[in-house]
Length: 505
Image (cartoon, rainbow, N blue to C red; front, side, top):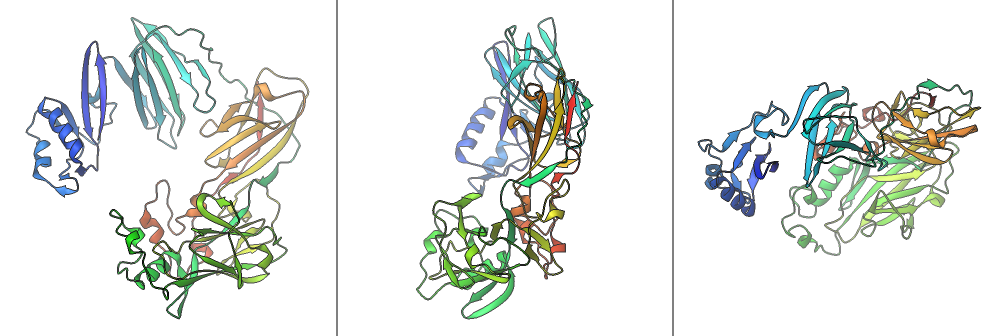
């Protein structure tokens, strides 16, 4: 449930919105809504809930009876901007073209904050905002700077024309009073590439990672080979009295799961993960990451190891084990065992970290000798599971300073890219036109431009066996092939695939 409120003079007009997918109301919300509706409050209904505190209740259905004049059925195909029931007399967004514009307003005593975003990943969006006001300022969410935003004022109404790149956004403060001491906006004019013969050098900023998501499960003296970790977890829990398998795949009511953590001394299981090392790999810095290390007894090739004190990876519950001194070329086995059984002993992937490449064979991923990186796909350079960042560096010689400079990217893939000039951060590039002003950081002589392209955890956490973009629900991890091979894995192809561009005016 959400609401919007419009203030006109001294009168407030409020519309409550029942969002799509709303099935249940708690008692407090129901009571508030009933009082509001009984007093003539208007409700825009995208979905009619029928449950109160999780149970079907006819009183909820009656509350949203379409016969009530203030209960309005919403057209899911009409955007909020175009919906007449969500319009304000003193605020309009019009002339929308391209993209998919969403907005949020926060009204204040003498103005309002307006956040505009383009949810399209492919198309630029344009539009016009008309509001009662005298001034407009753009607030940069990356740098914290505030500058004047181009606008016109006529008859106490301010008109703002905006352009949003794909995935772009704009935060405006629109004031009912004239704004003073706001910096004027300065358009970026740098558009001429500067030639440089210097090569691009590339390096990882952290260890590479190999994901082990299959194991051999030993349970009650019997071993089942090559089990996907979710299937192994379900099998282990079923053997310990959980008929439906892993209880943590469902919702815990109060403490009904943790209260079952009372297993006998002869219970438990062992999960063995194998990985293969080939070639000239530095063993000393190889580590393993195990979730909930306080549960498990961990061995590597028969040697018991303990987690490194105070060391975690990705999450505070992911313990780090230095295992390099026990790793050998060829086949290695890392075992997790628990005795007695614990209700918290979920079988999850294990992660191997170090300075190496991850190379596919016909049957499995193996660890191989690290090699120099170059612009291009991380996946194709031995980093298929890597989630952190790669630094791309290039030098440019500047004989005489120009008026303005910008760093630009063309063909690249990442969640964002941080730009550093001579070791100083200039900010981040996240959406088109993939440029950033670096004028104040360029100096005469040799300048080093670093581009730190950041990946994401989708290649480390998965899901791996379905081709998915955006949000991935829990069921996406349950789709696995019968005989897993590297060719079955799906990855997002991160990397810088082109030059580092320094532009000048």
